[in-house]
Length: 295
Length: 263
Image 1 (cartoon, chains in turn orange, purple):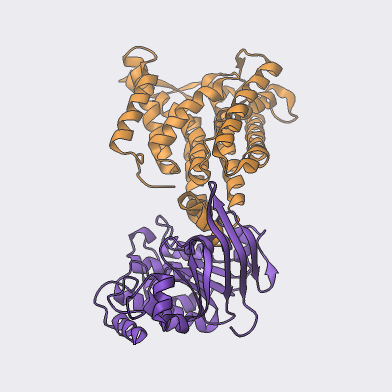
Image 2 (tube, each protein chain N blue to C red):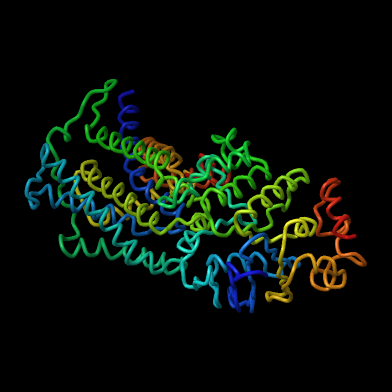
């Protein structure tokens, strides 16, 4: 029982991480038809910026208490900024040229880890976090690492905030409409490109937060972290139905759990394969994803 | 046409994927009433409308109230006062009726005219919280037209607003367009010639991506030879109820109009 609980908690924590990356990826694809292969790079930027700040380089930030919160905020802000710059400088000029857009994001997705590796080295760096988050707590006989809870809490807050944004604000309304029919949104007199930048910023913020908290989960940061998470995030996006935030949340939980349980109860590594099999099965049965609807 | 045209299109050309879809469309929308854009299927009517709005890349000249707009992006052109009800209605299926209307609000452009929209289409008020994707075709068309009436637009463009609708709904849409046109000029793309005869003052006819005729709509529809030649309809009379371009179904009102048109 304890093992099952631990696996479930770890799977949910991993699912939370996937969701943080997939939420933005899904909205970006749904609204703009852009497969953003640079999304993992945004996560890495968030992770390294948080690590840099928490290591004492940013005045006021540190590895404990309010200092760590500031470091996470800093990392998220840097990731958001990077996402906005990416949209304005690379995606927007290539609007209407999907192939070039994909190539550009692939390029950024490769260049950022290389850059991080060149500056801070290719090896994993220990991630400084508050002592309170490195401990465990007891649940049904299992010792669950506290950082899983932090990830789950952050993912829940992001999910709630996104749903409020999409459901209650005019910008959110524009995004939901744009996911359905971009041209018609412009034909109503709305500058849909602003929604593009906004969605990139939101997606970048969520991914960078994922990077910051992923550092806690893995206990370290390395240049390739974002890229390896991105693959599973893509699986989550496809399973959840492109453009659906709720679908991404459901799929992220499913993928995280299946991966953990399969890796533990079968051969290690089979969990990753199981996820792909799950994706194939779902696509055959429900081609539009779990929720079968958009946004 | 009396007075300067509200919308003057000259030499409008559209090339998509190396194919010339439009080559030389000229069109004037009268400063009042309904101007009809006619032509056989595939003549380029919808492309013309989309090109006017900048939804497809185009060259030529599109002047709105005397100002050149061909270089303006769609959203800025629309904000100058154009309401557009597209051929596929452009209703956001996953959004509620109220949300569909709210999207058409233009912040900073005065109070949205919900009173007018709800007076014309009381059903939209009753179904405000219903997802637009669950509406009937006619109700979706009401949403599409309602959005064009919400702002104090200078021009309404309606692309085949009666296409695929039940005869009773066609009559209702016609009634609303007639009323709207008393306040705002309307550019109407329409295959239902009975409706065109009832509503339109002027018309332009397209064939193979260019303008082949411009003039009063009544004159064209009263001329069986011209309608046959330009629109490919009718043998001896211009518009009859068996007419392929008239609305299908035994609708007494449209049949009566068609009869009138053919007389």
